[in-house]
Amino acid sequence: MSPFPLRSFAMEFRPNRVSIDLSALEHNLGQVRTLVSRGTKIMGIVKSDAYGHGILPVSKALEKSRVDCLGVACLHEAVLLRQNGIKLPIVILCGVLTEEEVRETVARDLTPVVFDSDVAERLAKESARQDRSTRIYVKVDTGMGRLGIPWDEIGPFVERISPLKGLVLEGLASHLSSADEMGGEFTQTQIDRFNRAIDTARSMGEELPFNNLANSAGVMGHRESHFQMIRPGIMLYGGLPSPHYQSPVPLRPAMCFTGRVLQIRDLPDRTPISYGRTYYTNGQCRVAILSAGYGDGLPRGMSNRGHTLIGGKRAPIVGTICMNLTVCDVTHLQGVRVGDEAVLLGTRGMETVTADDMARWSGTISYEVLCSIGQRNKREYLS
Image (cartoon, rainbow, N blue to C red; front, side, top):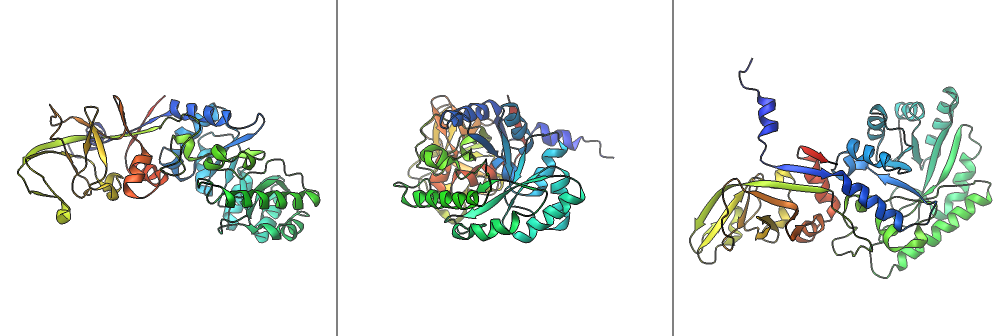
């Protein structure tokens, strides 16, 4: 046996830190509630490990804050929540496929989204075998071009599944493709199509109490898309639907990501920095080498564009971001020392780097930034 406690050492002396502020999650859920009518149900989206924030702690916090149900991508996420005591309704947004998945879904009282009549028939058969009822949603494609039944073909689909015993159709579900765009003409087209699909299904005797269409952009910018239930995702975590989107309510980022200064160097004029020599110093330059890179979730596209915070002041990233190292220019900062904290995502003093800043610098979206950072680092939770 090794004389060195390696596991304890790795946990205690990790240079990078991701912290999740669960009180920010509670705050953001409160802001969601200010945007919808009383009685509108809220499905908190916790798929993809709660956008990198940790599906279990986030789900428990949302359950404590009285969210109405949770949305996951796949069965394994739903089973994990059930195994850890989550009692809320859990909606499987990407549906189920195999016989084993059907059995688990029925046995664990899960709510799949359905877009295949054969799967609906298997769910009904398994529900009868287990002497249970299974709640489902039907996915309608109103213009996203992904999963779903075309909106103008919903009638024949509902006609096929309506006679199935043991299934309870909670509502129709669809997804807005571009609700963060200015103007919103296509979003209105999707809303109109969704309304027509609902009218069709209700004319066939379905009650559909919890139809849902609105994602975060729909919640914030398109009240007509709210229907009886909304599905906020990125705004729960303090992010925006797109980097330039303006939120109508104040949101608090839940994730903070910090590293450490490993070395400080004084470099002469015209010194190349990092891979590919994409940056040369302009005069005498002092740089700090930080303990995080793209292997830790930083977008490589932030190279020569992004900033970090050292001592509450901005320090521009220079050169190409490496797998586990990043270089920033601290020539203008006084007193920077080895071991100092470098905030890569978060707030210090009067300065903030948001996931949307990082997304804008790297040509992506905050969803990808948060998932990447959160899933590649040990997380600590603040309440």
